[in-house]
Figure 1: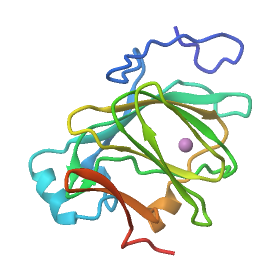
Figure 2: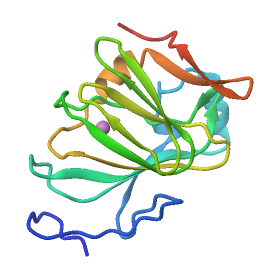
Figure 3: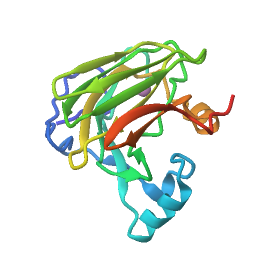
Figure 4: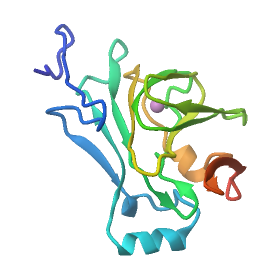
Amino acid sequence: MALAGTTDKSVTVSIDTTTGVMADHPALERNLSGLDGLFQDTNARTALLAGGDVIVYEVYTLDRPETSGELATGTSIVYPGKVGNEYFMTKGHFHTVLDTAETYLCLSGHGYMLMESPEGEWELAEFLPGRAVYVPGRYAHRSINISPDQPLVTYFSFRADAGHDYATIETKGFRKLVVEKDGKPEVVDNPRWNA
Ligand code: NI
C-alpha cells in the first residue's frame, strides 16, 4: 500500500497500461468546461459542450511530498477527441523551477509531446507505446492525442519540488499548434500566440 508522507518506505502501484488507471489513487480530471481558452475554435467547443462535459484528460499522481529528494510521478491520460481541428491535449506547463527535466514513457496510444523553450526553440516528439521522451529542462511541455479512438497514456516522473507554472502558457500559449489537416497531424503557427 502507499505510504503517503513518508520518505523511507518503498511504494508499489499497479498501473493499467491500456487505460492509465493507477489503482487505489484518485485522478485529477480536466473537463472541457474547465479548459476555457485552451482551444482555438470556441464555437466548436460550445457545440461539443452542448452534448456533455467530456473529460479531455486526467492525471493520476502518486502521493509523495513535494520536496527535493522526492519524485513526482504518475500517469497522464489524454482522451481521443478534437475541438474543431485541434486534437485533445493537456494545458501544458513550464516547471516553476524552470531548469527541471522530466521523463514520459508512453504506455499506450499515439500522440505527440510538444515542447517549447522561453526563447522559442520548439520540438515535437512522437509518442508510441514503449517510447520514452526526455523533456529537457526549460521546456514547456504538452501532450497531444492524435488517435481517433484510443487514449494516450504516459507515465511521467520529475523532481517533486519543481512545481508547475501553468500561467505562462495560459497567457501566451505555445508558439506552435498541432492540428488535423486532411486527416493528418500538421504543425502550424499559433495565430493567437501572445509574446
Ligand atoms: Ni512537467
